[in-house]
Length: 441
Ligand code: PMP
Image (tube, rainbow, N blue to C red; front, side, top):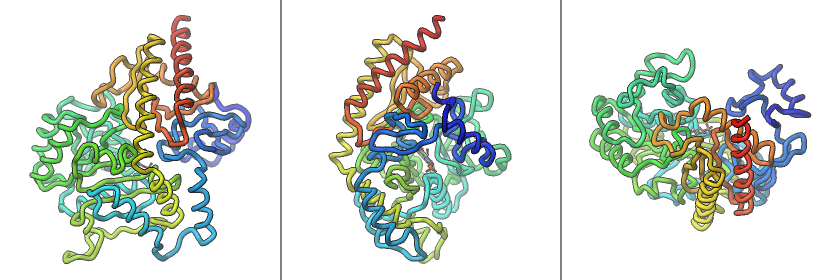
């Protein structure tokens, strides 16, 4: 199996273990053994340090919308680099990119840039608190919103601590998380409006924001239901709380993100990943009044926010090029490729007669080792048999020229076409048969 890295990757990993805890800076790279080391990426392909080429369906966790080393971005960034990479001055590149993003959604009156999705969510929670004067944040059980203490609560609970289905417990992720912080998080079940409203009603007047990812990856990559969003929007409006969308991954789904498709107006939206054109980025956009917490108004600056590298011109330039070229037509074509992928995979699973299914929408999909797509986090929670099967499939793909996110998820890029999907499907078919033959032995 390729993941038990041989050759140069194994050598580098040995060095890495001496200087990096666990040998990595990103825990997500630790999957079933040492990570592989990338040498270079070209379009939809990535070549590792041992010269093995794979078609990349993970795209740095859904952040390269045009694949690797996309020529227009390389050119624009190289030009910018000749003129410097970051200054204690604003740049026009920031303003141009802000104009572009605000132009994509009527929900974005104003925008602030930061350096990661984590920071964008953090800034959004703080902005909601500054705006409402309330402490609590409601989020959906199992959803991932980055590495900020509050956002991490109930990111990965298990049957031993998740509590009753209609009253999910707030479960800290990291050892040492302060109890007080956990007590400020209210946990809702996904796509269950009645229970969610019941829970929210117990915290009337206390909640600053209700945070929702409209296609939560860890919950199974099932789109949020329109009635769930509507219930949360109405409740927040009545209670004086804010609706906060995390579109760090899902902004790719429509020109103005999933909120376009759902026809809902969140007060705040976090973005990240693909909007940076391959560079570290985060952004928080929202209504004039809520975003006013960052600027001098009649209440003064309620939330000072700075970051040394925030809105640096390299990221702003790369992001502008990436997003300008991800226009309405491009979004539509990539979503159609996603439809093709989900249909083809469903067919392949049927032909292989394997207990698996495909979830997702737009240019995202996820394979579950379950016969039916899960409806919430608890259903998405994989049994040990399902985990073993998925690990087998992901390793099989690695060994046969493909890279996918280790949860069985994929994020397409405009550098791909039907040919790559067809090849992936053939390999997944063989991978599923190989799991079956292993089980038979
Ligand atoms: N929100 C969501 C929905 C995400 O998927 C992620 C990253 N996987 C984040 C926030 C955090 O983004 P970053 O890794 O850039 O901090």
